Every structure is written in C-alpha cells, then in structure tokens.
Amino acid sequence: MFKLIRILLLIILLIGVAFYSKLQSLESTSWTRPLHVSIYPINGDSSAVVGEYIAALTKGDFAEIGVFLHDEHKHYDDIVLSTVDIELQNIVTDLPPVPPSKQTTLKVMLWSLQMRWWSYQHAVPSEKAHVNIYVIYHQPKEGVKLAHSLGLQKGLIGVVNGYSSADYMKQNNIVIAHELLHTVGASDKYDAFTGQPVFPAGYAKPDQKFQQTKAEIMAGKIPIDISTSEMPYSLRSCVVGKLTAREIGWIKN
Image (cartoon, rainbow, N blue to C red):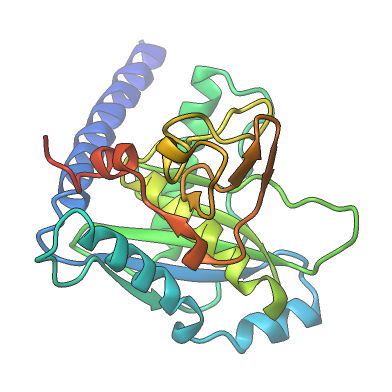
C-alpha cells in the first residue's frame, strides 16, 4: 500500500513538472519580450587561481552573447527590439549533479529532476521564463579535456564547462550561447560520433559547401572538408542557421 502511494505521488510530481516545463517552454520561445538569462560562475577546481578569475568577472564579459543573438535574430525579424537580457549573478559554491554515465531513460529522468531541484535551490527566484546558466570554470591544463557542457529545455538550465583564462573567454561565450539555445529548443547540428558539422543543417552557408568562413552555432565548428573542421575564434564567426531559427521560434512557419 505504501509503495503504491509513493508511485502515485511520483506520477503526480512528474505530471506537475511536465506541465510547468511546457509553460516555461512556450513563454521562453514567444520572443515577445527579452528572454532573461542569469549566469552563475562556479569554481570547478576549488583553487585560488580560479577563484580570483571568477571574482573579477563582470557583466560586460558576456555582453557579446547578447549582441550575437540580437544581430542574428534581426535576420529573421527585423523589428525585434531585444532578444536576451543577460545578468551576471553571485558565485555558486556547490557543483551541480553529475549526469549519469550510463544514460538510461529512467536515470536521465531522475538526474533531470535532481538538476532542476538543485537549480531551484541556487538560482535567483523569478516569475518569468528565466534561463539559468551555470559556468564551471577550470584552469587550462595541457592534455586535459573539459567535461561535456549541456543545456536542458525542461527547466531552462545550462551547465557549461569553461576555462578560467582571458585567452578562452570568447570560446567560453560560444559554448554558453550554444547551450543557451539548447534550453529554448535548438538541436545539435554535428555528428555525435565524429564531431563534424552535419550537412546541410550544420553549415553556415550550405550552398557553398566547403567554402565556409563561419560556423553554425549549433554545429560549433567551421567545416574545412568532409572530415576536418575548426573552432571559430569568437561569436563573430558564428551564425544561427534557418533550422535552428525555426526550432527556437524565430521562424514561425
């Protein structure tokens, strides 16, 4: 009997979360007003060096993300006034829940709920659709790759792993913009196994094939040939392609 009650309570909780997530999704992709985005720095190494770096961050360090999204949005809606409103929030001292290594449906679902509860505990309360991006900073180490960043549409949450160096700030902002667009419905435009941009959706100018000078933001790389690509230097070398624009509601038909 007690087990049945627990199952029923879990089902009610999941239905409530699903309904709330749907409302958030609809509001976040209406684009009738700027989407509020909060960025929370986290010291991923618990080191003094990273601590000093994130303590010196300012809102201006992330301004190019808002400029990029606004400029790209105008390609699809020339009367848009503002796309996103980005705020730098206080440093978060706790690390978010780690995604499951074996991603079964149940494990991913439970982790998603944990992630949303963790974000609820650490984010600034808001009654509006509000994307919360947690940027975990690490010291650059040769030969050591960062963990994969992610963006959750259900919950409007992004977790970005970045480097605590001014040399990597523009690269960090590319990843933040990529994960931010995930939270509002954009899908990846690269092959999960090779990491190469998928043709044509992952190409900034599909009609030019391998004569590319920019990266589709959800592909994250500029294709050089069928098996080679390179990282863009900054968001100035990125675009929001038509499929991505349609996924996030910039194109309505």
